[in-house]
Image (cartoon, rainbow, N blue to C red; front, side):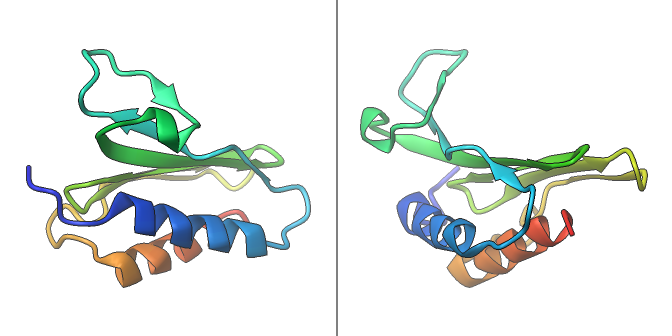
Length: 118
């Protein structure tokens, strides 16, 4: 799959949104990166500089009992997973699979993802 989206620019956009969040009790882990040049199974790394050929990065968050993750692949799609046992909301989706994401649509998806925790 050809690279469709600049992961570094997308990570900058996601990091800016994370820094601006004001949601009490929300915990967001450091971004994790996967290196396409590593043999399977690839390790997830939090230091972008240690990844020579990133093919994805992910966000993991939780608030109270709710938890979710959003992984962006360089092909321009995401894996979005979210579960809140209090409301029984469960989402497993591959956003962007049919129509690849650009930076603006990814930024909107990050907003949607964090909106699930409200």
